[in-house]
Length: 192
Image 1 (cartoon, rainbow, N blue to C red):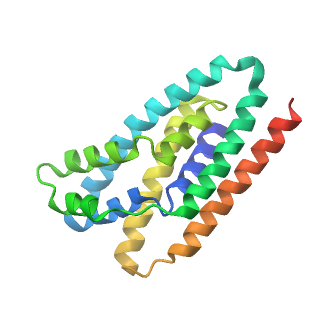
Image 2: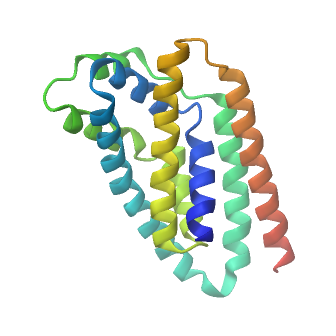
Image 3: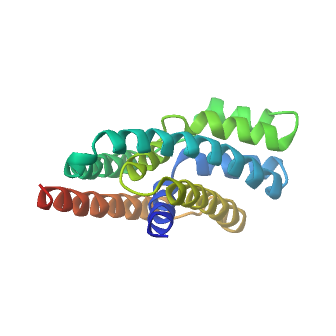
C-alpha cells in the first residue's frame, strides 16, 4: 500500500505542468473527455509497466547496496526538481498533431501519450520509485497519479481556460521534488 500511495503522490506532482497535461487539454478540446482519459490510461499503464520492470531489475542488482540506490534516487529527484523549474512546453508541431489527429480517439490519444512518455520525467520517476518499492503498487500508483493529474488539467482547463497559475504549479512541484530528493539523500547517507 505504501508503494501505491507514494508513487501516486510523486507521479501526480511530476505530471503537474508537464507537456502531457497540455496534450490532454488539447485532445479534450477535440475528442470526448472519456475517450481521452481511456487513451491516457492505457498508454500510461503500458509505459509505467515497462518502467517498473526496469526499476525492479536495477533494484534487484543492488540488493546489498540499497543506500546507493537511495542516494541516486535522491539526486534524481533533485534533477527532476530542476527539470520542473525549466518547464515543459508543447511545441506548435505537437499541438497541431493533437488537433489534426484522425481515426479512433482512444487510439490517437493512446499512441500520442505512449510516445510522449518515453523518456519523460514521469517515466524516469517511476523507474526510480520501482528500484526501492514494490513493483505492483508502484505501477498502479504511478498510473493513477498520472491519469489523475491529467484529468485535473482537463477539468481545470475547461473551467478556467488559460488562467491557470502556471508559475505556482511549477514552483510547488519543483519544491516537492526537492524535498523528496533531500529526504532520500539523507536516508541514503544514513544507511551507509
